[in-house]
Amino acid sequence: MQIKQNISLKPFNTFGIEAFAKHYISIESINELKEALSLENYPDIFILGGGSNMLLTKNMDALVLHINIKGISIISEDDTSVLVQANAGENWHQFVLWCLEKDYGGLENLSLIPGNVGSAPIQNIGAYGRELKDVFVSCQALDKATKRLKTFTKEDCKFEYRNSIFKQEEKGKSVICSVTFRLSKKNHTLHTSYGSISKQLEEMNITQPTIQDVSKAVIQIRQSKLPDPKKIGNSGSFFKNPVILKEHFSKLKENFPEIPGYPVSNTEIKVPAGWLIEKAGFKGKQFGNYGVHKEQALVLVNYGNAKGQDILGLAKLIQKTVQQLFNIAIEAEVNII
Image (cartoon, rainbow, N blue to C red; front, side, top):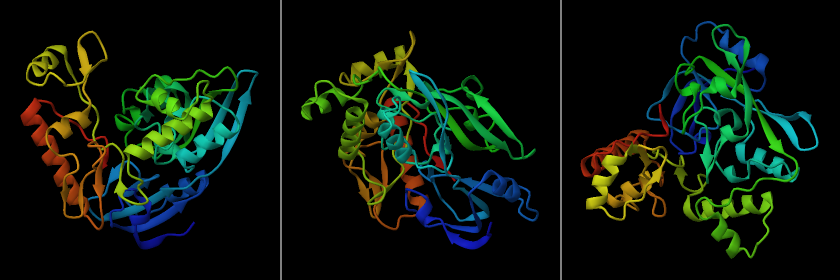
């Protein structure tokens, strides 16, 4: 385990923001993590995963622990399902592809989501009608204070839309080291009705799709709508889709008859934040070397050497404008550091 000084974090965040870590360690085992958390003279510690859900707005005057614990293993299986454990440093999409190669079903709708496995439970990642919690069994996390591993069940995690206990009462207290999933081995249940998956499958001339076909369809849809972070810096969806009361939605419908909405309860409607941002005039807008993506208004982008503060300023302007136009507060999904 080596402590490095003044390390650029640009390669380690998908926004491609230049920021420096005063001290940096690449963590490749749980023992190394325990050792690093026990170091003296480093009062401030920052845990870095895949760097896909954060916006760096300043240099890190801290010890950055970059979680690179690798490994995938089968815990148990029967005729119909398998328990697979993936360590926190595994790339999420590569893990999904590993499962698909073995014909394990359940993660195909979550293909091509950026980031690492360890970050996935924190915000209960989701796409195309499916969420992590649908296949989640448990995760192991190291308590930063006691240096002991603790198991969090699905119930313990208190999963909600882009939310979990790790964003609430456990925030900053523990480090996820591995995640266990229950996946199907046969008679897979396909979820193709959400978004444009079924339409994409039709265009691919597939009438009896496999889980691999669903994954390919999702990948094609995402690639057509979302910029590749390797080419254009971004963190995927920057904002959460807001949930508003039905009465509020009905009033908005009078002025904006075309406003889309999806009931989430008897009294609440989820409104696509991308539609609100586009209607507010921000889709495709470029401000020097940063802006809003031309295909997906939810995605803020770094076209070159933008600073985190620039993108944060744009995010606040979007929030203010949407609030003024629709009386809706849209919340950042990305962690602002």
